[in-house]
Length: 384
Image 1 (cartoon, rainbow, N blue to C red):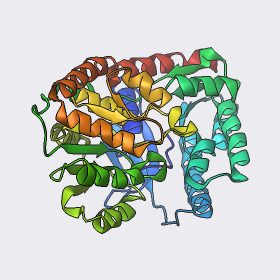
Image 2: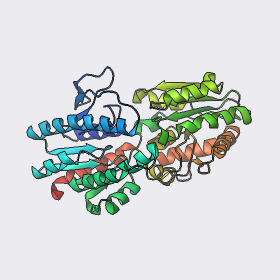
Image 3: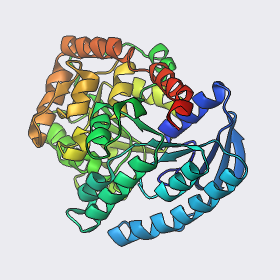
Image 4: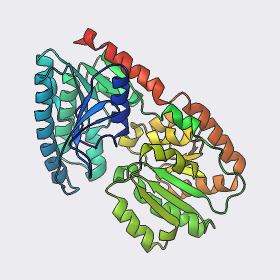
């Protein structure tokens, strides 16, 4: 497995896939950037991990180009070494969509290539930096990544359709492997707090990047506290990202620092406890083309924890939650805040949404996706 965009085992999707494959009898090596305090080489739950050091680069288009250039050089060399040692499958995790070269080489050597399509790279770049000539290049890289693959793994129906339309990948060479909470998250779920809440505790879980809509949490929470009478409301943000520093400063300027807690990265075993503290969980990801086609795994985790969810009506979020979430109007922060305020005052609605979400989450857990992943790997030899 080649991973550039995150560390291991912090990348949840890569971790659960690797562990599922090990459990099924595969020997898995993950090549990945090295995080602070991490060893260069270790075995984590049966997965062999080989890490390389990445320099810090600015959060700009050229900064990302430099980061990907260095990361890809390390991954290409590591991938070549693994192929020489006899690796039977090269599993490419995007973004970026730039590892197709090692994919084509693996195919020429008679090995299988899996393209695990986490994100839409062209749409991701546009969401971060606006229109750019680089987008056309990324679309080319995306097509080449599809073309080198023996098997494409899509996280949802939207990505499956894009693989077929933009990548001309036959349907039989695409497997849908959704992101989902572990079955244990359902077992750890607790009953939500009842009553009319004067002090609702909100929780956000996930990456803090511009495309995730986290910047809107400041005006949303300010509106909730100052205009809806929830002077004792609290907000916990679980996760990390490039927007955290800005968010911290903006909450301080708004006079809300005492109401807001940042946990940073936490071990996955701690997530259930943090979600259990919540009265209402939020996903402020805005209505964009990128987000419409992305599965927000946090929504399924919220539901598995038996907590009501407020979010925007993104296509894949609706497919995940159906009617088990409170949807705000696209682009309307005031509408988002009103949904939170209404739930805080209405214990019956909170309990109803929480129970509906919990029941729906039972069909979205990782063990369902794991079966699809293992079946897809069993079929790899037929498609070489």
